[in-house]
Length: 473
Image (tube, rainbow, N blue to C red; front, side, top):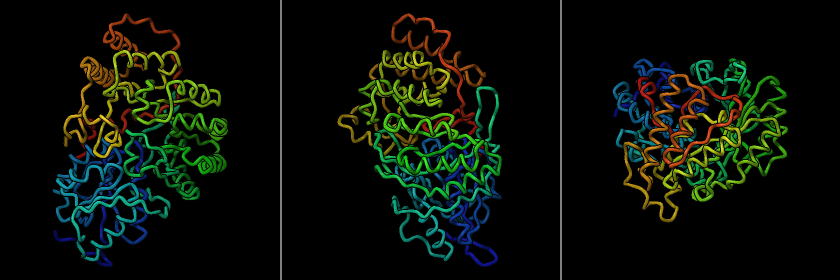
């Protein structure tokens, strides 16, 4: 296809598109934008969670790069790419991010010519140079999953919607805070089988220099952020690096709070760091507990046990931080009794208010490249790969458990739309789970937990896109 040629008066135009990034202002657009603008390219950013896919943003584009950071984003991108092609018929299409390499064949069907993994900046820059010089890439649909060391620079957020338009922090007292987003590291040194980070990084992680992270935080605080959400897959992959970062954050902005994601395994191993995290402004820690069934935890290679969960809850609470556990509540191995056991744990640990109800409906996704496919005998539980689902379908051996998952998912969507409280939503799920397990529900105690600080964005990376999200194009 013909490519727009760059001239001094008309620099080569690159359009970076983010379909969805958990309600956050997308770092995955801001970092490559800084690289490209630093070399003189004209860059336009389009965040489909906040902006419509408008012809004027795509006009004159020589390269359109779409970020596929998660399942939801990839599903939205599949719907958006035909429209992008209509609006920018002469542009070269590429995709990048965690979900790009594992969906390379599907992206090729949608006209994507080049794929970059989770360290995409050098590849995007080289591709833009080639196209600006009038050179078409030698190989269509070349997949670059290289993890060469990246020289991080300060992200350029100048062309993105205002921070105040994104998900905000809701405090238990009703206060709300504008939230910024930062990455202290990329990748993860762990190999949890269901995690999308693992097939790309394969146990490696990279630290972003503290001065770069702080400069990015500084510009977001100047833009109104009162809270920073660290998007690292695990904040304590490099505990020394993490502690340097939060100390500098607290010194520079003592009134700014933050949250981070930390494995149960790391909460136990680095328990001595938790009080200092609290002292430097950590309000809550998200931890992918996933299950309270040791058998399932072993299948997922989570690195912790059922008994480790309450220990982690206690340690975090003693430090003065709230724990926000997440779960993969429905798997091929989930039983009705097992699901009820999970709910009972939340009641007994007084965590009901700390768990967004959508977490109680999450169904295991098995995308192409998942390390679950390496698990002996696992493929026998799966159907054929479904391009529409972007994953391998599976059915629970007990159809009543699948029916329960669908019922919980439908109820959560309805109840949140009606503005019901987490307790109200949980009470009905509690009754449904007892019914499927063939047991009489015991009354819930009056105290099942206190509200904790939480983000206003109710959707998660493994959720299907909503009609509202698809209306952006």
